[in-house]
Image 1 (cartoon, rainbow over the protein chains, first blue to last red):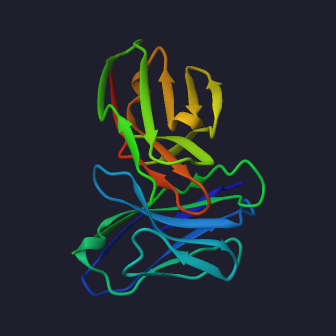
Image 2 (spheres, chains in turn cyan, purple):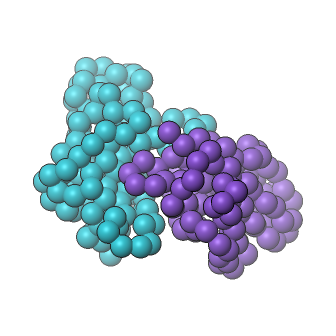
Image 3 (cartoon, rainbow over the protein chains, first blue to last red):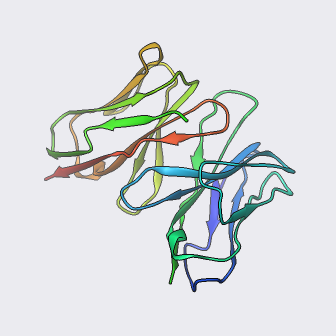
Length: 114
Length: 107
């Protein structure tokens, strides 16, 4: 199993540009989520999905969109990038219908918005 | 949302020393994990431990859910243990992280 994969690893955007961060998992997990990590802080939840076609907002959803058309993929879209979105983004997945509900994280995408 | 506090925020050890990291949380939770974020930024699962005690080599963890805290023990620390240790708690869909404990192990 590749686990949770993310692309790209690094990205630089100009203010106002849009882009999509890709996330995929091959563990057949129902639950997938996106987090951002700012310097010196823990991770904060942006959006999550409990299954294909179902998404919901987390703690810091503004400026981001998600969709879940398949179990495997959960892309995160930045609609109009702002410098405040400079951060490291992590995707994660876990089971949600049987224990253990251990969450697994991807390697992260480091995004800089200038 | 649930508040998660970790202590100490920073910890410097000599190689071979033991340490205890603490995680307090403000409400009852069904799930708790400990992660190690290595110097390259990768998040590594250490323990999924909603209650009880687990051990994995030099690391062990204990969660007392009724008292809303968890402890991570690192014995005979090595330089490769350096990094940030995060505690994260969740019930259904909202995983909340503490701010982490930054551990530096000196040779």
